[in-house]
Each structure stands twice: as C-alpha cells, then as structure tokens.
Image 1 (tube, protein in one colour):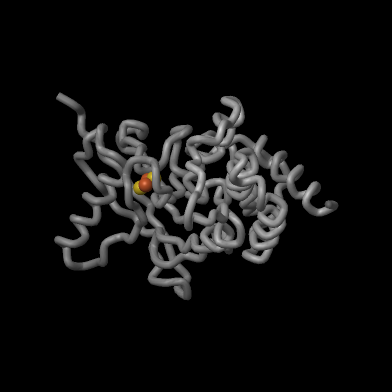
Image 2 (cartoon, rainbow, N blue to C red):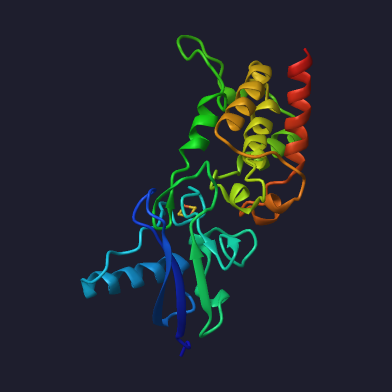
Length: 252
Ligand code: FES
C-alpha cells in the first residue's frame, strides 16, 4: 500500500492588488504521493470550504497537462517547483518528503501584478503578442495552403522548439531583472525562421521589444536562470537570435 504523506504549507494570501498580503500556515495530511500539486491544493480548498471559516485559496490553472501555462506558482523558491522541465500541474507530491514544509508564492514581478492570493495578471504578455507576435495573411480568395510551402527540416524543427513556449512567465519570475527576453525571443524566433513570418520580421521585432520595455520588463544580463527554470527547456540561444534580428531591423 502506498504511504500517504503529510505536509506543512506556507501559502501567500492577498485579498487584492492593494492588500499587503501575508504568509499563512496550513497542515494537509494523507496525501497520495501520486497526487498532482494542484490536486493537493484542491483538497486543501475543499477543507477550507467545509470549515466555512476562510475563503479558498485562489490559484490559476486550466489544462492541467502542461500546455496552457496558467499554473504559475513559485514553490520552495523555484518557478514551478523542484522538478526540471515540469509545470506545476505536472508536478507530483512524490517530489516532496513526508513532513516537508512547502512554501507557495505567486510570481513576483511588477509587470505581473497580483490579482488575488496566487493569481497574477499576465496580460502584459498578451499585449506584447498583440504588438507583433503574429503573421498577417489575406485569407480571402486563393490563399496558399501553408503545408505546401517547403521548409528545410532543421529550420522547421528549430522553429517548433521555439514554439513550445507556453507563455507561463516562469522566465520572468526566475530572472533577477524580471526580463521577458526568453518569452519574446521564442516568439520572434519561431516566426522569423519560417517563410510566412519573414515578411513582417523587421517591424515585428522592433514593436515587440518596444512593448516589452513599455510593460516594465527588465533587461537581460545573461544569467541563464530563465532557461534553467523554463518548464519547456526554451534555450537562451533564441535570445541571441532576437538580438541579431533587432540589430538588423534597427540599422536597415
Ligand atoms: S494548468 Fe495548463 S500548463 Fe499547467
């Protein structure tokens, strides 16, 4: 029979963006090691709901499959917790020791203001995408099927790797400068490598970098913490591609 686990949780509670916020301690017992981290939080919330003494803890989630990037939590001082290449929703309680104290915080970054408890507003990322993270295609009439455009295999693979960024914001939360360069560079690289994205590449990189600065994200100083904490293993090589794209666009 599997041994059930007990934990002490230290969770950030904050009523709204104006509230100061504080850590609150909770005990949670008899957790299956095969429960996901979010299932463990669900059980705690059930307990809080039944007690009728406290509101449940707000936290973000959607797909619970490592796809949407919503489950943005800082766990024991690491974005998405102790396991590499793992989102919070894919993290299992067997990654923690019985009796361990687990500290759970929201992303800490000015461009991601806290909405409530562990939920932050990441619409600054959406605004960066709106500023250029797309291709313009006239879909009226005889549009060429994208699948018929030949793309070298290595380019397609590289673009695909960049496209695996789920926009969770772990790179920003892990960076001491709160830089969004890994996120922005993955979007720019993904598009600039493919024929469909080449047409708007100059305008795109200038607009997206400008928007990133306007939103208050910091500069990159090559610490590499973004790559280390990225649950999708996005490489900082894409930051070099962004810098190259930016210089070319700026001087031409
Ligand atoms: S809930 Fe979608 S990536 Fe975690």
